[in-house]
Image: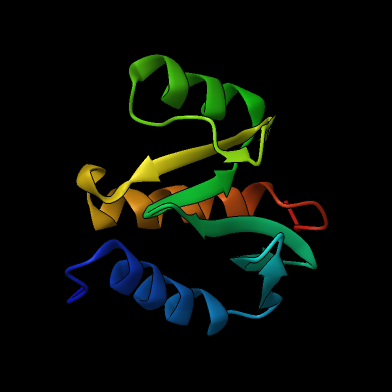
Length: 108
């Protein structure tokens, strides 16, 4: 992946994501959001990749310090985590795949 900034890395992951069936992109609360099966799974937020993950995965990332809970205004987004690019693009890619796999309507 050639993206050197967090936004460039997000755009490259978004392009990969949008090539898959059932994927989409829209604005959510003014943020650029990726969708799977009609459900929001990830968005770009303050230079980080924010993802909706299963509660256990989100809790593990938060407790390890690898992620923080994103805020929308003053509201904490439960089961969402914000991960900086410093964890690596491959980690972002793996977390996005986990978020997509956990999206409702996904075949087991």
